[in-house]
Image (tube, rainbow, N blue to C red; front, side):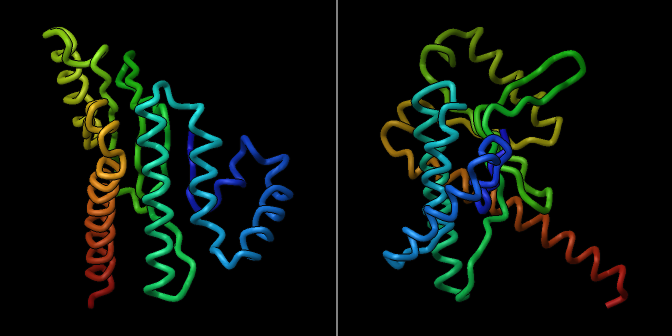
Length: 195
């Protein structure tokens, strides 16, 4: 499922009611002097958290939306304009490799194509409890890496202890990836222009 943080209420699953719900919500938010989009991030996590398969995925998703909302506030304060986050959040992303499918818990995708960050939320029951589980996870990460993904994993304990720290780390990695790709694209375009 794709979740574009800046326009979440216009997402296809909410399309029939989105214009009305968004308009009513925006009026209420403006009345108390708050900015619109960052608050939508919180509500987006509420709307879309049912796509998560576990409580730790839900916690991390909400923390990521909080981080994205905070980023948008900081951009607005610094540049005096509303900002869109260059990352898109998706849950339960399916990557195909021939006949095999690999589902990634949460992904952050960059608008310039630079960020392809897969985030796995590893509960103790299904990850690294046995040698076979650990081997399966490592093998899977290698396949996804070969397909262009950077994979990071957080244990359930890490997420329960501090979901915002996990979100900060993931967000920082994805923004660095996206920034590097944007810089490379800019330099390539500049060199083609002869400057």
